[in-house]
Length: 192
Image 1 (cartoon, rainbow, N blue to C red):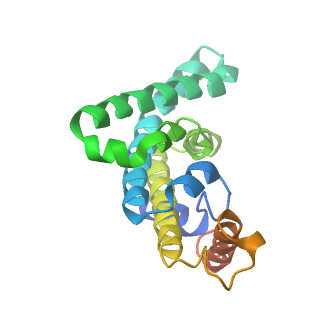
Image 2: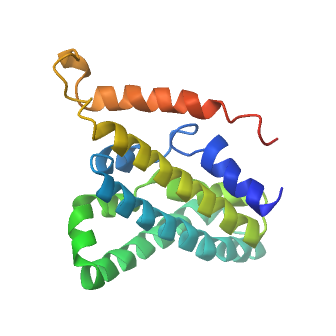
Image 3: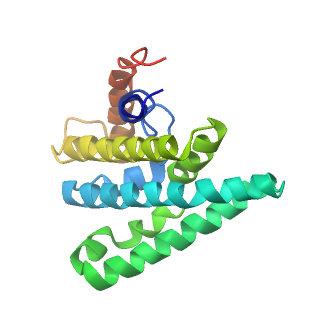
């Protein structure tokens, strides 16, 4: 599969939030405001691509020494270290973005979509360039999901008086996300 096909496939067809339901915790937490969603999306793009750039060669090294079973533990440690590095950089150089993301920045460490893309690249036997394209597409898809839901949440739909009390807040966000995921299903079949 070509690089462009991998990227488009990950953004539209195999979107980690809407089709694979990965990364839901930061997705729900940061999608309240558009500026936070865009900031978190940028951070996730950077972390996913950087994590793939680091974990793919590490996996090759693990395979060489026949200790590939350590993949998950090693990948979690690498991702946690990368997120800490990014957090320190944002705190020093982009204080406003650091404050806007607040507690959600450390959520990237526990974002299963970041770990999921690193493992999926290995499982799919992608080359290094294909792995980078796959992680970039997955991160852009995650960012697109954040922005779409932030747009829905900014319409004050979530807390309207006409909405039953049991559906206000997160339940309505999840319902809106489910409807969005159904619309993304329309892209399935674009790539085999």
